[in-house]
Amino acid sequence: MNSLTDAVLAVLSSTDGEWVVRFTDSRSAALPVTDLAVTRGDAVFETIAFFDGRPQALEKHLKRLASSARKLDMAEPERDLWTSAILAAVAEHPPWPELSVKVVLTRPQAGEDGTVYGWVHVEAAADHSKRRNTGVSIATMSRGVTRAAASEAPWLLMGAKTLSYALNMAATREAHRRGADEALFLSVEGFVMEGPISSVVMRRGNDLLTPDPGIGILEGTTQQDVFAHAPSLGLKPLYVEIHKDELPAMDAVWMLGSGSLALPVYRIDGTDVSTDPEMTGRLNHHLRFGRRA
Image (cartoon, rainbow, N blue to C red; front, side):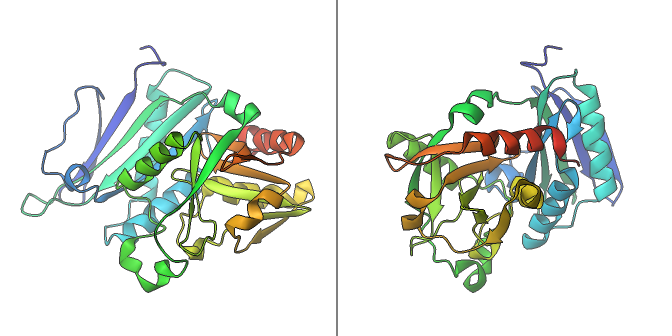
């Protein structure tokens, strides 16, 4: 197997509460065309990074997977089963410095036999090393919701990680049309939310800031790791409301992701902003080598 091009797929299925795990070729695996994960994106997922064979924030990812399942009125995944399946799938892949592990859980198909499917897909991760050093540019754009939408309209599933990512990908394409690398969502009032596939963290003096998850954003596992590590860096972690107009005055801004780690932002809406190369290096060293599962 060529670890650059090939992948490992573990498929989990349960009809009567008894889960079966089997490995199959990811290029020939099949799902029913009526599966709700395919037809409606009605499923939940997580993407977990493995560095040198070591999982990053595995427990936090599985906890968030369970939270997403609850929000979609799905049965929660069995933690021990999924942990074993993930580790077994990674063990099947040849050793590689950075792996990306996507975990998906579907709901039973109405009118069928009640089988629940899930899968663990392991492949070599995209190379983010250059972006960790040179940084990214971002374009801010409205997500079309108020900062109270999560509490006023819980059926919008804000804060759940579902397969319904068409909006996220559309925002990324819009950012590219504007000449930026990444998008940053805002509430209709102009308050900072999150990126399509990342969390945002800012430094202002000795304060490390991120939006409160209550605004209707996904609670980032990497952001949580950074906040737990912040005091050792002499920084005070704070969940606060941040308006778009405050961004240019920040001492540094980062987009955080499980696989990308901390990407420094050097331009926002076409305007250059301050970066902190030393802190970027310290954050990425911790995320790459210091955090645990």
